[in-house]
Amino acid sequence: MPEAPAPKPVTVHALLQMKEKRERIVMLTCYDALFARLLDASGVDVLLVGDSVNQVLAGAESTLSATLDQMIYHTKIVRRGAQRAMVVCDMPYLTYQVTKEEAIRNGGRVMAETGCHAIKVEGGRPIADTVRAVVDVGIPVMGHIGLTPQSVHALGGYRVQGRDDKTAQRLKDDARALEDAGAFAVVLELVPTPLAAEITNSLAIPTIGIGAGKDCDGQVLVLHDLLGLNDRFSAKFVKRYAHLADDVKQAVQGFAAEVREGKYPDPEHSFQK
Ligand code: KIV
Image (cartoon, rainbow, N blue to C red; front, side, top):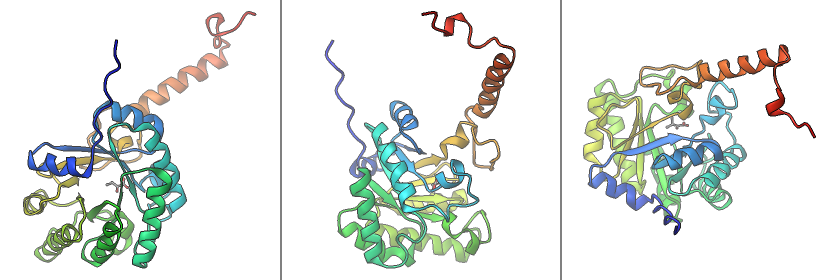
């Protein structure tokens, strides 16, 4: 049998076309090659190597201590598992905010060393010039506004943004500034549904929501949350599609019991010669 042709990779252009055709974009966080292969085979469009890896896998309190080397390592291994999906690397705190030159150098390092397709940065108008400079050297940039976890202390916690007129207007201006600066998509995190819908309708580039309601052009969740692997985290917007933390505990308890009872390994799982 002839081999099936390789699937067409998801590009920046393809995402823009999806918005035009009103096809919803599916994005998930991904931190390793094994899950990248599974998510890619499941038809996920975009794999985001989020700096949330620092909390979810590395056990840190926030994303603030994630490093560029850490993100490069995870992005490189995710890229190995992805055939069709676009791979986006989240730029960690202070790798793009200080100067445009640093942003270009660090973004360029990520692209060159990992083989990923784009980077993501947090912030709106204040970093629009930087986004423009990075886009101008050929690096596709995804924006991220609303609750931006790298500013969690300035925002006073992980809370919904844009609930009053002033902050809502700021978010609309931020989204517009990112589009004007050349961003190809923007994540809206923890934004009321009507505001996210208004921003989505006002932009030519796709919005990808997390806790931003159903009217965004796409949705993203942290993979470990949707799988129910992260049993210490819950939030209103997280829907668990599986409860793998329970499965993991049950499997490990089964193994431990059989080891203690001398039942594992049995002859079937042993070599006689
Ligand atoms: O780091 C991350 O996982 C993210 C998503 C929550 C959008 O930025």
